Length: 421
Image (spheres, rainbow, N blue to C red):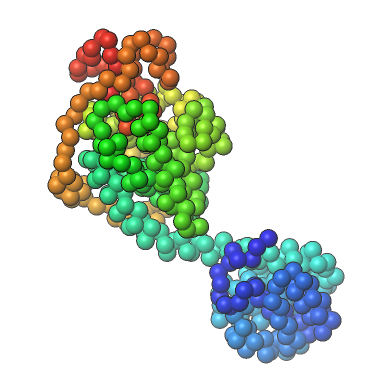
């Protein structure tokens, strides 16, 4: 196990442990066991002076006996917590003082060792103490970093949409919808944030796709399609430059995987697809179908819902489709969630939504391509997704046969072709 997964407070390469006990033999045993396992152990046999030793050392864990002359372990723990509230404290007790040790746990001790203890028991408690501290630290880190990540992600997503000539807040809407789905699934705050940011940045890899392909109004060649599909890998590579973004990177990489294994880039099947990728895939498809694109108008909500449900269990995780139904109603509006969930989401550290009009004004300076219908399949060709003999069209000509929908309503297509919806 590596010990670099903790907040570095001491400035030392190894985690530092302060051992406090009035018995020299116990201190010697603790120190030897800890040092063999790679810790920097400091011993103190006087609880009254332990405070000053602690203040000067920058420790990561404290191990203290409970019954000592001058000051008991509970009082020492309270004193040290005044200096460093998050310091994990493991209390050591004999069989006759278990009740006191339980009181220490109730007052916030991280763990307990009962004499005589083995080296394995000692290391298990120390590792547990470090892990719990790391989880609290990461939760705080994510909470304070969340608005920063939100701001950066939304700035990038606006640039992506501008380059791709989108006319709405697709990336932002995707982040909001995905986060609400994660909340319904009971994921914790950090996981919700990871999926929200993944939604904002799901198409960041498109900055690595040439304009000739990204903005091509007609059908892409096989080579161009293969290049376009690289955007999920490019996005993951961009985000993987920092370990803190690794989970977001995996979400971005796999948001075009399919439940039946026919997606990309890795053809993952079922639950092998990261949960964030499965969530974003559903929200992305529905949002893409129901907003205007440069080559087609928005699809009616009833048709979009029909397509989403029709592909549940093949393209999409059926459980995620069911969750999406709890988040979005038949008219495409966000449903109110359980009051407790709504309060949690409202209390989150999100960047406030910008006015859609302001975004449109910023995008208005960009050139706009005329909507057009492009033949992508002839009647004689088999569509890899639609039912045999079914008339179909692609929702997104830029990224392949993502969802197949019947061509109908509005304009009647040429009977000899299938067209972009």
